[in-house]
Picture 1 (cartoon, rainbow, N blue to C red):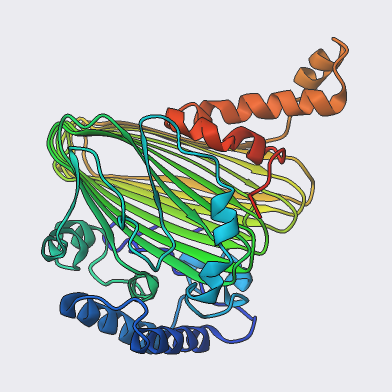
Picture 2 (picture 1 turned 90 degrees about the vertical axis):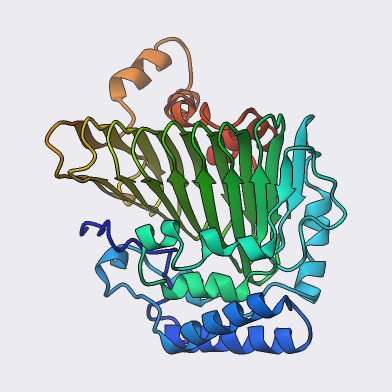
Length: 450
């Protein structure tokens, strides 16, 4: 697996390619036709500014071929599950079919603000936000969402076709500002149920200096749908964000999630994810420590079974001194599942006294499963403490023997070891995540609501 260029990181996961029909360019053109037809009918219509940006995204979707497995960053990712999805926005009658699944969701916990994201309607409609959590006016979005903004420019000077697809297919941007003193949990839930089509979402979250927030994103789907998510987050000086992402899918659903975070000095980010069940999932967390002096903790856990593909490409870049990173990625591959991890960390000359550690651990549960892992460091600074590593193993026979010698069945012994393997990552999720039973779902004990 080739290294990810830190100066040209993809703005989102581009993966629509392969041998399935229609060919990727045709898929994009068909989706653009569907989106334009919806806009003419008033679906997804917005202001003059947002309409202009959407038109530009549609042109990009039509004109540029989508990446394929022939490209190095995608050669391990089979996109067949994506091109098999109907190239149309999840709206209208399709959304009506989601209502039953949404109604069956567990109620939000105490102190939690839950917003439902369907990619079409305004998630803030009829919602009263607590003091300290407020919408950002559309006129301010350009500070963070345009290609000229520092975040996008640092991550990718040339927006990818996939970012254009999300911009074209998504409904209203959920843009929120968090002020210091807020004491609540923000829960963002998207439930596609058995619906078919593309559900695209955009999130802009700005934490002011000294602000603190627990954020939980939940994505669920079980039909032939593509959930495509782009999140842009800015952490001011001294701000703290604990962010969890739970993605509970069932074949043939697919997920592409992109997260771009800028951290100012003194800020702290804890990001933990648990992904399983999707025919194809690709998660791309990208972090930029704008001037160093921040703390980044990344924890990720993915499970793939049968012929599922679980892919994570992460990147962290330090732009100043004394930044810290602690990253742990875990994968479980069973059946004929395939897991891919590529983690890039860049420490340029300006990032002296950086302390960064990255570890990838894979667990194979069958002879047909496969795990591809490549943690990587690009270090130019000469006064740093950096380490990385990767392991792939199976359940340890001596541990299984010990448990079985105590009268525990082979199946239960394996389950106990798997629970212990997952717990290290799941412990970093916000407390509100317990409501969604992430461990039970990862181990196949729970299924998404139909």
